[in-house]
Amino acid sequence: MAINLLEISKNAVTPAIISKLSGILGEETFKTQSAVKFTLPAIIGSLINKTSTNDGAADVVKLIKDGGYDGSMLSNLDTSLFDNNKFYGIINSATGILSSLFGNKLKDVTNLISKESGVSSNSASSLLGFLSAIVMSLIGKQVNGNGLNANGLSGLMSGQKSFLSGLIPAGIAGLLGLAGLNKITTNVKEYQSKLKKTLQDSKIIAMAFNCSWSTPVIFPLEKLQ
Image (tube, rainbow, N blue to C red):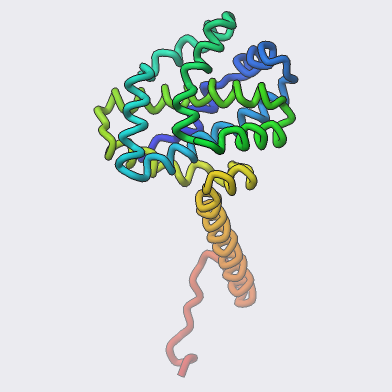
């Protein structure tokens, strides 16, 4: 079963870390939390797109190795937020990641996150860098721990599609070409809705015959002739 990188990323960004981020950025906590909520799926969705080709997956593996994203920073997140130099050092180091994932759309993505969450564009930019470093560290931990090559990474990221659950804001999804990932969730919800309706219809039919809806109705053969 594929690991859920979105859930692991959300768990890594604890309420205490969000509070510290808010203090550094000068933002209200609820706005920072909202920005994190929108930013993580956008990063992971972009990584899914990027790693869908061999060249793209190879680029991400290289970024992981060159940036030293082996997962070690995950145990020092609190410490990095006590030191502004360390915090902004992480952001500056993530410049290559953001350029690779978003290209010339980075400014538009930043502005959309700002608009959706209420944080300033500067804060959105900082959060994009910081959170991308966290996500890359989580992926790097999987790559190093399981000896994944570009093909292995592509498979890992492909398995993340169903976990995004339509969490990418429509504007960002459209800008980055990720609307298809939201559509996957829509299809799942449509299926669940149809299944629920089918079960309800089955219950109504069973009640008409005065029996338990979970019990099959059996008619004597002679009554069917």
